[in-house]
Amino acid sequence: LIDVFSRLVTGIYVGLEGPSWIGAMMALDNMVADKVEFCKVYGIDIAEDEWPAHHLPEIILADRGEFEGNSPENLMRNLGVFIENTPPYRGDLKGIIERSFNTLNIKIKHKTPGAIMKEFRQRGDKDYRLDATLTLEEFYKIYIRLVLYHNTTIIQKYPLEIDMITAGIAPIPSKLWNWGLEYRKGRIKDIDREIFRLNILPKAKASISRSGIRFLGRFYSSQKAVKEQWFIKNKIISIDIVYDPRKLNYIYILDDDGKSFEKCYLLDT
Image 1 (tube, one colour):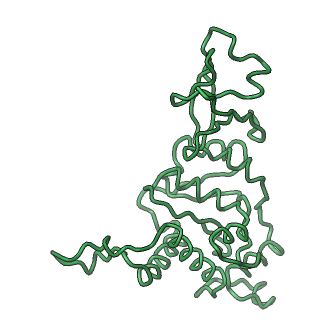
Image 2: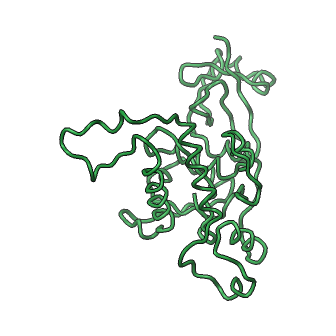
Image 3: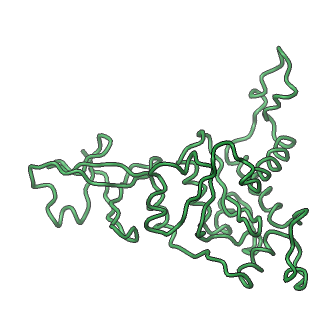
């Protein structure tokens, strides 16, 4: 994810799945994360001004795909983020991010073994995948360093405004970001990361029965369910829940405002 004004990379995700809401969800989660703590997980120490983004934007411009359908509904309704999707086959309408992909891919291809060089492949060549040696974590480290380099490097042909020239601001993403926060009326905001996560997790239906809250063949309960005696009724009731597909120890029942929730834990059965 890239900020349109400053060109600062605000969130990234490296994964093995194809284009999906799960990948978009992980990038959004990284968008609001403290980047100093995030980089520390991968053994990279940075100062906050090297990657200062941990905010929620007013608008996200996407290219349909992952941001179509009901997946971003809670993000829009509860957190007030507008999703704007470009028409099909109009990558030029979000050239900033397309150009960034191209630039980063070119840099990675020249530094990482196992890259796909389709334009240079000939019939009978060795399978390029056999040269791959990096783990996902090692690849992540390379990508983080490329992002840090981008955030602190001058942008060629950036359209500097008169105020920026007068203030002596160089067209460097991190400097433009900080200058914009101080002198431009930005609409980014801080948000509790746990609340944000609950509003981007996939939604699903669960059913309440005498055995518990049933979801994907598993049964859950919660303090509120026990206190209000949800399980003594014979009638099966359907409810809306959100869940993390990577870890099904818990599911969550969101309140109407999207700012509070009931956490349900997995039963031994």
